Amino acid sequence: MELKAIFHKNSYQKPLIIAGPCSIETPEQLEQTVKGLVQQGISIIRGGVWKPRTRPGSFEGLGGIALPWIQEIKQKYPVKFAIEVASASHVEEGLKAGIDVFWIGARSTVNPFTVQEIAESLKGVNIPVMIKNPVNPDLSLWIGAVERIMKAGINDLAVVHRGFSNFRDTVHRNSPLWQIPIEFRTQFPELMMINDPSHIAGKRSLVPVIAQKALDLNFDGLMIESHINPDQAWTDAAQQLTPADLQVMLQHLKTRKVHFEGSEALNQLEDIRQQIDQADHDLLEALHRRMELIEKIGEYKKLNNVAVLQLERWQEILKTRPDWAQKLGINPELIAEIFGLLHQESIRKQTEILDKD
Ligand SMILES: O=C(O)C(=O)C[C@]1(C(=O)O)C=C[C@@H](O)C=C1
Image (cartoon, rainbow, N blue to C red; front, side, top):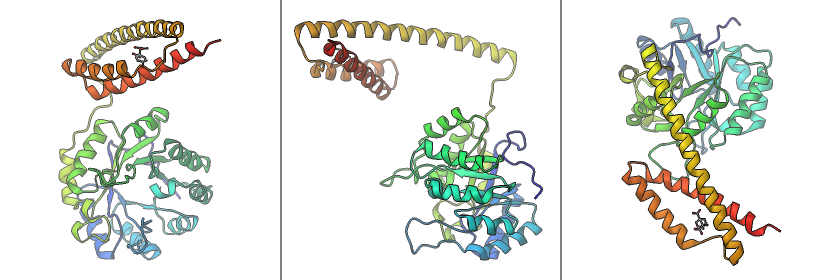
């Protein structure tokens, strides 16, 4: 199969947009949606064929019947087509149907047996693969899935941030927990990171907000659910956008530059960063001073045989420091968290001092 890499950073214009229906429902729905998306300049279509559902009894996708419809669409429109695969047989059927891109869904990424089965079936195959984050906020599990697929020889890879399950309803259908994709990118800066605002938002009004946040965080692409008639969609009706609405959203999104450009801006940046270096240095010196005093009190507690934890003093600190922070325009919750960590460290250090000998 002759394929140009899709997910290599230089082979696409950022942000890469992938859009299409949550589920493929009928040949007409598929064609009308794809036609609308092609008119908006979209060239990679997503479409659910096999749908892993949380509870039985919901529509679980049409399965293999939808594959010939995709083949027909690809003959009529200049698009590549991405589908979700959750087993070796899905991979086999998808390859036979000439599918261009596979993705591994959040419910499969959680299960190393499933990911391994898919990895085995991809050995020797040259196809781009996207790996969604697992439903639970477990970075290692996500990384493990990527490693399994890489070991199978797939190197045209992207990861998709679709958010993490909640126990109760929250603003988001799936909590974004942005620190997890940021941590992923810190460890794998070369891997393309796509955001799926539809599954995070759960409702159409929130999709643009999430998409913009992803672009602000320098994500490489967006995978968005789009349906020609969202309200009648068989799955995820509340979160799909019409191709026309998708286009309006894309026009309003602000794309950000990755780096500062021009010598004046770079000099300014360098200047501010030097000031930050100095501020951080001052911060560390203040922390060092605090730790020395903590040790001093520790020795004094040991001498007088007094307990390490001093609840009243700690409660006072926990009240005053966030108040001081607020007056300085610093987020008090951040300061409460930082002092919580500092207090833990004081306890650790003083316990060590008291228990010595
Ligand atoms: O005031 C004390 O007794 C301390 O040892 C200092 C300190 C702190 O970190 O500020 C540490 C432990 C106590 O529980 C309360 C406060």
